[in-house]
Image (cartoon, rainbow, N blue to C red; front, top):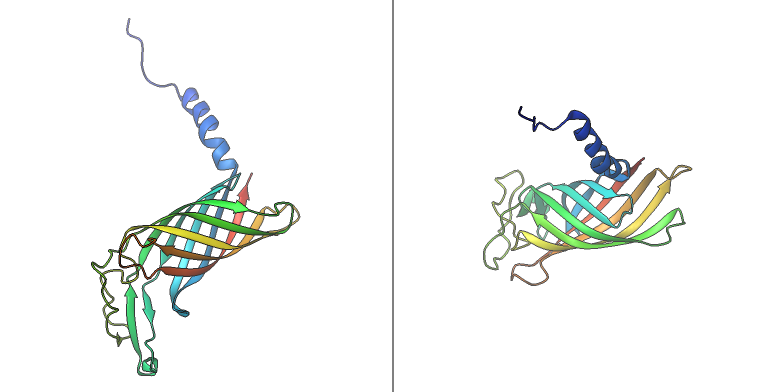
Length: 200
């Protein structure tokens, strides 16, 4: 008589509750919006999505960066000219976070980690492309960073909302660079606001 090797449904459900359940119930999900900047100019928009376990020591993020433009110096913006910097891209991040003053409603935070950029890096150390009419075909590569995998640093404040602080509003500045591992290292910056919901 053969013994069935099929996994039993109750066993799968039990394993799911043990492994997946605590992670999902003790996690924080966030979504927000922000702006990208280069040399103190707003160059595009960002839309971040975040996930963190209950301890909030680590964070996974996936952020959409719109294609970035810069108004060239000398008033060319009045002629509707823009310097193309980066095509639209997804940025995946993994960071170690430090939250201070955990018992307070307003908490400073710092984070350091890694960022993977989907945009193709430009080769070498090219100068920025010449200004082009706004709405023209965007550049095909990233003129700010020469690597896909980069470092990321983040700093800001987190504000607890509600009596039980089930919601948190995070206002942070993020910098992405390759630390000089590649000659093309102009860096990418963003200021973002994220609303987090603690799942219980």
